[in-house]
Length: 143
Image (cartoon, rainbow, N blue to C red; front, side, top):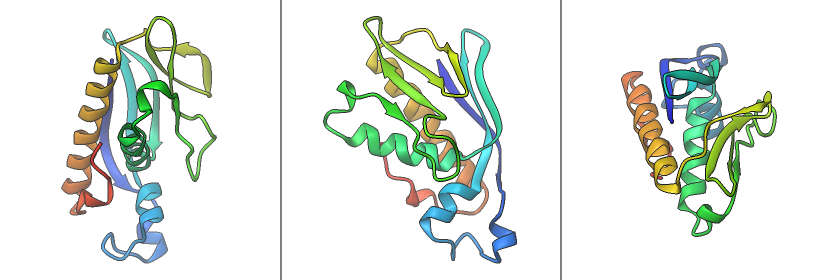
């Protein structure tokens, strides 16, 4: 399983009359968007074109920092999208990733270590995408 981000952009920052350096945290989290997809065994499990990639990276990092993360499910509680847009749930077989928008579509179960590695790879990709736009990615906590 892997999370893929490409084509980063700032959706509304120019319309708001803000530069990335002036924008408050909540604006950066919403405005840094990318084409996001979840892949498994060469197939796309889920994708969205204008996805709040920085917000997901931020929330996943906070979740992984929790001492109880390996015992708790995750769901993106987005400021602009439906609750559960991205969900990570533990089952008897392992961790699975899906979305409330496609409730019957999930990744195959993976171990905690595989999940954490995929999240960390996603975090690096988001940081690189943010930095490529000339924004310091330090507003996203380290996972």
